[in-house]
Length: 339
Ligand SMILES: NC(=O)c1ccc[n+]([C@@H]2O[C@H](COP(=O)([O-])OP(=O)(O)OC[C@H]3O[C@@H](n4cnc5c(N)ncnc54)[C@H](OP(=O)(O)O)[C@@H]3O)[C@@H](O)[C@H]2O)c1
Image (tube, rainbow, N blue to C red; front, side, top):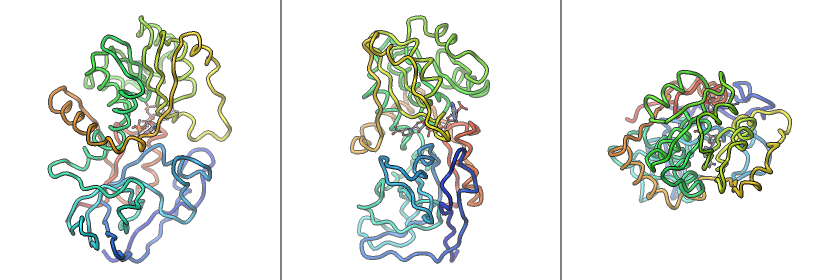
């Protein structure tokens, strides 16, 4: 391979993100400078937050600029190195962007340039042990602070983050109820992931089903979705409940500002707390989370699901799968095998 295939951000989206927002180009393979590393990307991570990075607005990271390769988490292999900590052939995790090759200055990369430990498959490193697993771990445990016997409700429950959050709550001795779209995802949550109850928001009345499935009310709500589902959950919070705002995917493609829940007064009445977080603030504690998650995979039946697509040409379409609910578990795409 002697060209660098790239998908550039060509047009900021208005409404649902689609292939028309990106432009395919081929450029020369870049050369690493002093202290830099050339990485050949093998796997890309697809994350709902990428939709936010496409907007020209202030956020926790700067927006992707028009004409730049679309920012994306990746696992790749070192193809050339001018840095003593990285050797040709190393498998590394970084924010490689939608391109075959990326030059990384390790100290300046958005998420750094970390070695993938031997024996850990990329699919595991990019899901349950990656950003989404860490998001579930810190969001649920640090903000949600679940106690054995409490009821934990999770929205986006069959997804990469929600499925891990719910299973951690189960491992901590909680009663766990998941909200997800469609019978297939709900069956997986109940039969495979060990959720106590499930609510199919596409086919059931969410408000009525939360009342039915959470007879002792909701102590922790881990919310990935926002909108109507957040409002329904707030109707059922317990005294001193913790509402963890992890994300609000139901609104990411909205074309107009979306009103907040009409029942925020329930937080006052129930002396409850609602708090947002961004996982990058917890990256210095990644080792602690990865140690616990690995232990739970080996000893507590923590499972994870990966939806692996293939082909560089399918990258833009794969991002859309997150917003149509087509992904079954962590959305990844493979472009190459390690050499
Ligand atoms: N705070 C942080 O640091 C942080 C870090 C990572 C992720 N997040 C957030 O965590 C959430 C999940 O991310 P993920 O990477 O784990 O993705 P994911 O849950 O694996 O995939 C996204 C899922 O969202 C659901 N969804 C899409 N549109 C929806 C809608 N209009 N209403 C309800 N559900 C909808 C779909 O599931 P259904 O088929 O069930 O609808 C889809 O499969 C996102 O909100 C993301 O922004 C936050």
